[in-house]
Length: 489
Ligand SMILES: [Ca+2]
Ligand SMILES: [Ca+2]
Ligand SMILES: [Ca+2]
Image 1 (cartoon, rainbow, N blue to C red):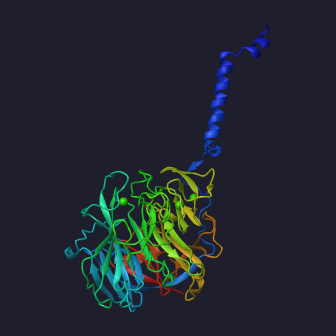
Image 2 (cartoon, helix red, strand yellow; image 1 turned 30 degrees about the vertical axis):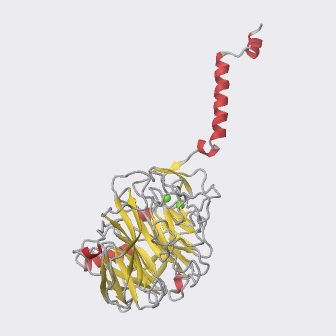
Image 3 (cartoon, rainbow, N blue to C red; image 1 turned 45 degrees about the vertical axis):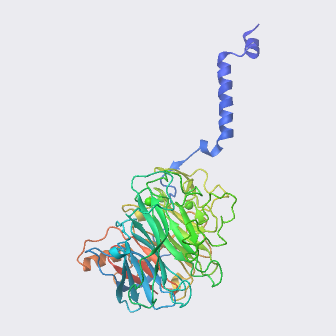
């Protein structure tokens, strides 16, 4: 037998090895998507920086009110709401104080959550913990209705008694509770809170110090006598640490990493303290372990929410891990991706995302606009998405029909068209600057100038939040100078 024939008929050990390798490779390709073989992992997915100069919109502003300092530090302003049927604005500070502001800017301390009478045991830090959310019932001033005099607060508490209704998948390293409380005025017109101690609707045990509650809100567009009217949306982070270590955002039996929707006046929840709106997306799901409170899932640290008055679309600013910040649409039952996706890309780790196969899952809701944390405009201590407003008013004509959002730390304020929405990426992002006597400024520069005037150290971060009130105004909140600013033409 020639060597050639021998090789054809009798496989050598070398040939067997080669054949085995080919089988293994074929199986590997069958089991894993081809894209995973060509992963492109980066922490800088958008190489073209955010446009810094073209199409800048300049708006005016005025100092609307100044919150008093709290223990010598600026009030950490988190949200600002119009009083439904009334003439006040309500502003909550993370330190636990709720203020009212009259149209002329007069500030009144309305309620101190840290008062021992309330047994709240508020736990606050400058970042992420404390009195995070405020929402006033739309029937606050309608005498004789079930919502009369009622408002809601989302906050962190060091009091972990009694047993929480919701727990994380495992114990973490920084247990505290996040509470949704209802407060009820006797006379809704009272200048200061005149009611009893609050009622606990939701108590959840937190595994880690960060990623707790975000904004809570009633949909300002809801029509009376519909399930949407009086439905309270509650933004809940993924529990914290980093990378959602207990994989809770994708878990529909966990309360973490969700936006919830409840009827605070109802009673058909498992603890009987609130209701589940009849049109919630998972209410009739055959899997009874799924929490009926869930409106959307797959959020990481949902910070701010907003609605578009033209079409009812809801949006969320969800803070990213170490790579991508996003603004995403919020539709009933949607999966917003975390921690499978960070923005439009597959999440890999704190070191980056895989840009090889973006937005390739029809079951996911991806951002309308996003940006990466490496952008040259944003180089501060960290980067986080904030906002949020869809401006359909006409008083500030240059902002008409824009989706307006922000980068929390640098104080950059951005826009894209609300009518011709991008499909992800940062190419469409343009800046909004504030008109100033010596040139246009970023919000952080305006705060820094105020700090000098106040005799304080200049802020190194803004912690900007945009409040779009039901009376059509746009306010800028921050944590660094106590000033509430009203945007003008
Ligand atoms: Ca970049
Ligand atoms: Ca947490
Ligand atoms: Ca997402």
